[in-house]
Length: 195
Picture 1: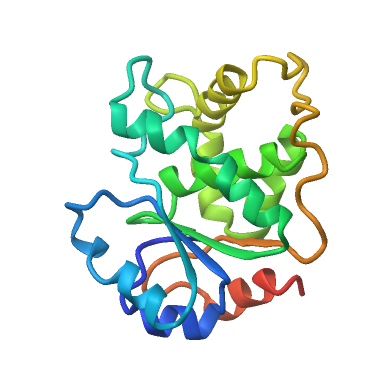
Picture 2 (picture 1 turned 90 degrees about the horizontal axis):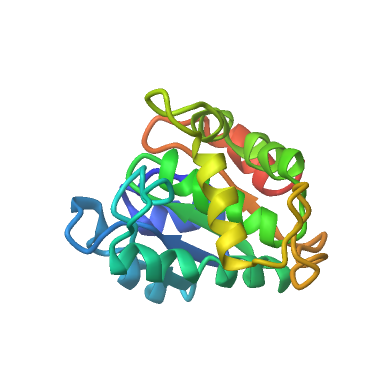
């Protein structure tokens, strides 16, 4: 699930039933409070990978916090490998969320087009946002591909993922994209459950 920050964490968990939530919000963002406790209360796994904003993957010089969080994206791919239903969210569920979902899919062994389609299948808006150039510069996907080549130097230049990560996802894993309040919950639930 690529999502904006859930307004009510418990209701969000009850509705989408993820096994694990990945929060990309910084500690100082308004929506951050309560997510960790909401996950603990409902016995849902929680990972915090705070990113500074939409351009975190595009910056040449990243903050130490962004660099640390981006280096932990393979943890999301490993959750998929374990067959977990993973919800990834930031404030709006578009740029940071799209970057992490796309990168996790790439690390899980999907090619570039397949990874984008996996994001698009769950939330079209998120896929569209990460695929378009930003203010005349590269797209977020371009930034993620560059990041992955830095993380996995043995990755092929033709878009293949490192053999280290091939075949990570399995038929039980799910990554769902969702919007914030007012999103089309039924279509997103159907996508999350593979309908």
